[in-house]
Image (cartoon, rainbow, N blue to C red; front, top):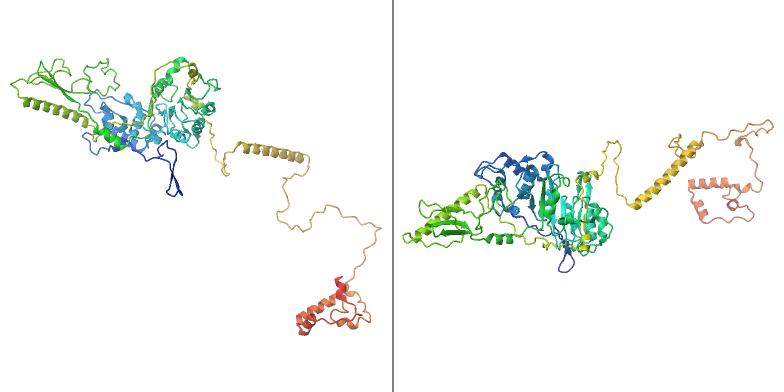
Length: 627
């Protein structure tokens, strides 16, 4: 599971001697209130098979339900309040008047909305903090023709949202509406956000906030006209609010024009929930008419201390009302209205959005009504603000109080038994987060001429536009050779490779021309063996042997050197031929030297050290040979 999404910039922390710097990248995770609820170990009734299946799906893989389930089931509303209800079995607190999704596991909600149709309207939105640990997992839910999931991110005035932390929003793959008004964002931050919109070849899906349709940047002082080139990455963007920025109304932004007056309801101060609801009425803008939303306007879950304080704060709502004219009393609640509510023709309560399957007691109706005296019925219209009656003298005051206490306990016990049938653990209190980022609602004044030019709008592109712009990935064919290595090259490298390919084509053309002309080609295969002696004479003769002519003289006959006569030495040199180095030839001198080296004569060694003095009349062959 991916890490939680936190908008926290790295904070440097120095040691005592300032030698070590530690960067804190995230704050301690605060678990949600739903983590305190434990799964029931025993139930007072036998649950259905659907209950077990939904529980396992929510625990194992809630993000894979839409991929594996091609059909949607229809939720059957129970016939009566006493009948078994699957939703109340999974979510016991669903029938409470102050029901809040903060105490319910988001995986259960995501599993139900992917499978069932005809769910109560309370299932349309799920409020969840941005740092919830299950949010990155549930962002992987794929939109299908039967189901569509979108995310609404409303963080106006959030100081943690900046150019450094906006990159963490890359995990919001279903982001549809984003309100970043009055923040420190600049065009560089939007450039970083647009860079997270990518296509994954591995999963064949888009990554990042590719489905963004509404973007509000009101009163962002660092936003200027440099923003427009970076918005082309959001293919479905159709509503852009730039009022209060440094952008100019006459800046060139293709396909966007000032919004017409009939489309001003899609801009501030209309809440993003209503804007997305209005867009979902058009069935072509999303993958399915069944649109469910994650609503995010807080960064973290409230701390445990805040939840404990909220749990301790309670109101005493038990009120006992007497009728002075009939000696009757009514046990009611102080939070209930005095007038009975108006009803619709279907039997619902006016102004209250609840499902028909959950028919609660009408507001203002007494929780318990009984006679003070036996055989008396409460038939008159009793007001909650009636004056307390004075007991009759013949009835003891203590007996009256005992009767009232018994009736209160009976009413409270009946109510608790009904609620505890589906509830096996304590229901966590509603979430009271103090970090909600909701822009203050202003008076609906008509915008000025300058503001009108910065309320940019274009007709919302249909969902099919994404399929038309999806990259065509060719089907890979099996090849016997090694796999190709695909690298990302810069523009400079591509220009250098283009020049190299041109030179290579020119050389190839020259080689083809030479081969056509009959000349030897550089790439012609060699018939000679690869290993050969470079000093060996080639067998083939390049020039023919000359033909001997008849007029040329015959070659001289050769004789062996051993058959030649050796001329005698002169008379004066014949005496000194046996002396070393004098009167002998160089060959004889070398021969004598080798003989002496073999014999190792010590006298000969002494002669080498102290050579003999040669007579001046003798011919020095050694000196002559050195010349």
